Length: 194
Image (cartoon, rainbow, N blue to C red; front, side, top):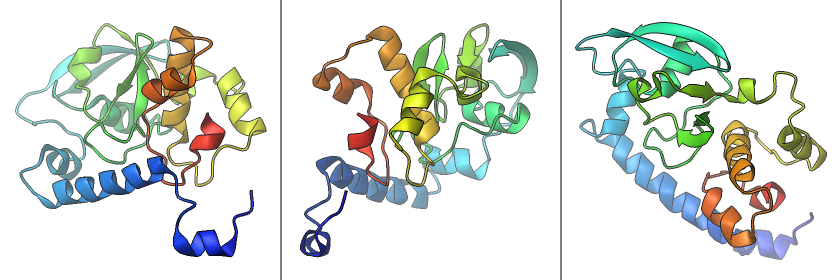
C-alpha cells in the first residue's frame, strides 16, 4: 500500500490503534522508570522471582514434561525462555499489556510476563514452538501468505492470540476479533492481522 507524502507528513495515516499503542508505550516507560514498580522489578531480576525460596515445579510445555527448580512467583515467560530455552515467546512491556509474551495455558491465551510459573503447574503450556514444529499451522501459513509481519517482534504473541480466538470461535465477527486480539503491534500491521 502506498501512502501519499502529504498524509505521511501529517501523520493522518496512523490508525486509532497506533495512537493507543503510543499512549501505552508512554505509560510503560513511566512505570519502568520507577524502581518500585513490579515491571521494573521483574526486568531487573531477569525473571528470577522473589528469590526467597525455590521449589520444584512440574510443567508440561509443548507436550514435554519438565521439573524446574525456581521461585514459584517467577513469571512463566522467564522459565520458558531461560530454563527451557524456547525463545520464540518474547518480552516487551513486563506488565501484561502488549501481548508479545502470549502463550497458551490449557488452550487459553495468557500474558506470560505476569503469569506465575506456579499457576502453570500441572497444566498444559503451549508456546509458539509447540503450535506447529514445522510452521504449518493454518494461522502461520496465513501469516506467511498475507505477508503480515514487518519487524516481526510481536508476531508470535499475535499468532498465539489468534489461535486461541479461532479455537474458541472459528468464525468471529469484527467485534469479537477486536475483543479477542488485544495485542499491540508497534508496526501497526492490524489490517493484515485481521
